[in-house]
Length: 232
Length: 406
Image 1 (cartoon, chains in turn green, brown):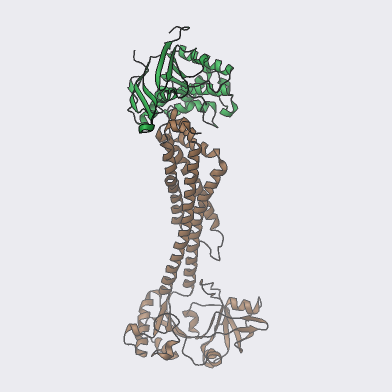
Image 2: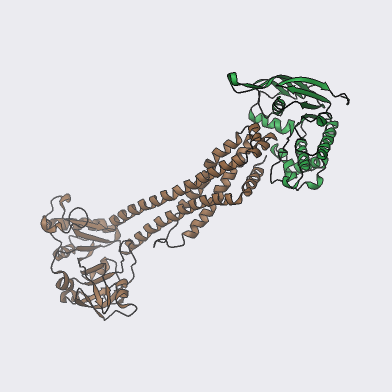
């Protein structure tokens, strides 16, 4: 089967010459469709950089990256924007909803950028919000929603485009334990429906829910294990 | 992503900070409005000058003593300049030598203050002439009568006065039949002229006209004439009439070359050319000042859009992360800037039309249609041009850097 993510020899260097720092010092990673992967590591280990590269938000100094078999590392900005819109659903620690814009409009936005007609957009956005359990909050603006609700809007926004890959960067970092549990249940549900989920976290209770845990340190992968408690 | 949608985003963006949007729009509005109003003022003043020159009569030619330049009468004694005389005037009324001249009248100017009881008035034009002066200078009588040829031969001290002079001396009373003293000499008012209006430099109704003989006898003595006013048969024959005047006067004054002429001719055409060129300069200057204010408004747009882009860096990052193409971000900010300038421009046009209804420093503005299109068009271009830089900055932000921005 063709992997969703195939990263080969990824290097990310900041600065020049002696003072340069390697955020990624040669990372190889393959993730198959339907996997639920947690990437763990202390801060500065390069996990966020890897995440940004997988999400086509950042470029590499060296190495190759294939998403669904398509080489991303050689694309220009215009092609990248299409990839971000269609292949990847992003969830951030700080939710990153557009302010002063209703939940529904937020979820519709990536669909709008893809050129989907407004009627179909509305149907798909509504459905996505129903999936995350916010059918009754569609007309609320971000400031009228709790953190957990905002993060679920973000999940709905990420799902609405039916991406190959759901990338979450510390998604529970700003949530209380109840909301964290709800969100993780949601991730389980999404993964059970067959979608590939990659979560960056340093919280053990988040990584426990994943099927595969990758550990990073100093820009390198130092551990890649299947979670024993779960069936891969 | 349809353009309509991007326009909606742009409106949403603008509605976030209404006061700022309003003030930026105001800048463009003032710019456009001042372009329209100031050009209208320039245009209005040149129209007013033209109108009053038209009222002076299009066929009339003035002959003044002296060589080059204005106000050279003083040289007439010193140089070989021969003064203009009544005999010159008579020579010009010669149907054989000057078939295109309808009539001519000698003009003797004086400076005198007129008194009626406690009221005084100093007419800006105080002249003695012949009855033909009235027609040649396009002056007609509103009340009373013209003075006659008989009045001239008898040197009767009668006078026709303009509206301003009449009001200054008599208020609302009927001046006809009354006697006033001008320079100490009594004159009886026999008529008032119809209102001429201002020529822009001089009040055409501040006027005192009397038989030339009366003025010479009592006030000026027998000095050379101030000027001769000549009326051509029609506007078309003005040039021919001018040539005839030159032939006759050159012979009488023994002028050999055209450069050594001791008199000058002024006609409507030269006056119009002078006044229209000076009012053109005036209009251009006003337009430049207004254009600068429009430019300042445009810089205001750049400034605000740059601030907006910085403020919304994170939002731009989010939009890019969820798949917004560069084009969509670029157009969103460009459209925001264009809406600002478009709305400002439209309000400015309205403001310009409203503002042009009022008299400004005594000038009734006349809108120049092309200035409206120009100002509006420039304001829209300003939006695109001055919004372009901030918009392209927003569009070329790297998503990861934009997202990290706090």
